[in-house]
Image 1 (cartoon, rainbow, N blue to C red):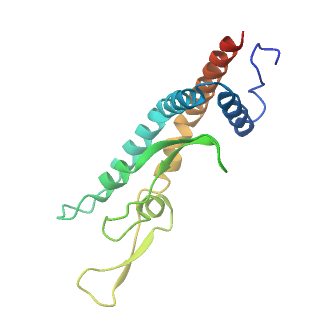
Image 2: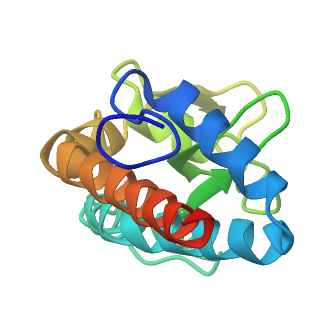
Length: 170
């Protein structure tokens, strides 16, 4: 038992703490339900960070109206918190998933975030390429402001689960 009354120490490294917490949950009889609760609480803790990232991409300038589905709204729909407990990678993060069926541009979240932009053919012209720039570092800037708060919220969710497990042991 650690000094703080928990069955293990949480303050060392986030990755190790998540793995230790996952092992403790697996040892419990209803570990599957406890893991679901932990993952749900961790996703809820990251929801404000995901909302901030969605807000940043929606504030990117648009070149004008078009008939195709909106690139910004498609990227915003693909931003969500992701939590994995166990396996090769354990942790919690906000991720911008690929936009598979939008304008044949699956890497839109990554390309709109980078400073050098992306190249594409001009519609209707066979050999005319242009470089287009998005809102540079929109995802990175969104995480700068809210990232520390999100990390604290995820750690709090982990500590709450550890206390819940410790209370069951006693």
